[in-house]
Length: 303
Image (cartoon, rainbow, N blue to C red; front, side, top):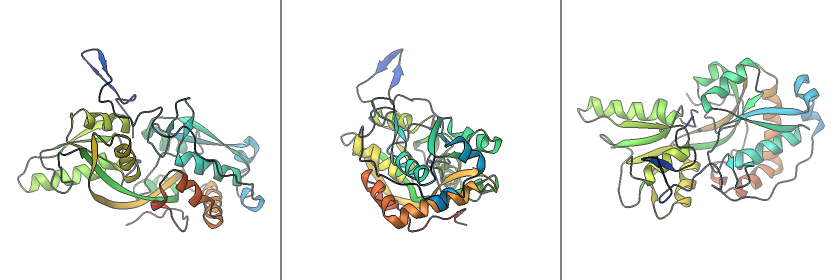
């Protein structure tokens, strides 16, 4: 399934566009890098669990921090508030996981498609950018699954687009996501095979750019992970609406180096939070409780 295939990479980062050298403010999507969600949410207090913390690799224990690659914005999962602080559901959950492990999460901003290679190179310990765990990615990294999401389309209000019959339409996506690499190519091929016009995928460096393009009528629809699409619509209720149902549900996972003991540590910490109820509290704080999992697993990709 999706998320970003990666849950990305982007062109219209501030959720506004330049038209003839002039910044177009009217009609800008509110799904921006900053100010795209509540400035604060209630933090869930979590204590260290010694037997789980003992599972951490010695390098991370000694450093006292978990270096996590993140790509912004992707509200409500990860974005910056009006003060520039990185916030979101994923952030609160990873902060809680780090607390269970007795370390701090050190977030490093990165282009989406560079996070997994950086993990392989050892410059990042893990990734946290709404990554979809799929079989192809599991060839290079291990995933600790923590959430379930699906793809969801949005359209301009009152301008219906059928995600299952979008031949000839222009559809915005975030660069390097599963929506760009898997979903739209497959749907476009079906159009071509039926003798119909192909779907034109229009990639943007971030989801803010994709949402803005739709708000401004530069595309007919956009496709993204379900919590992201739902959030963008809530932020732009006079401009956007959901199109079709959620489909291709799959797990989000935190990527770590292949064979690393970090996977077992993260999985144990996530399961502890699930069992304690703190995981659900964090999800409810961000309104994404529909995607909570009853069990965290390693490499749980479908198919």
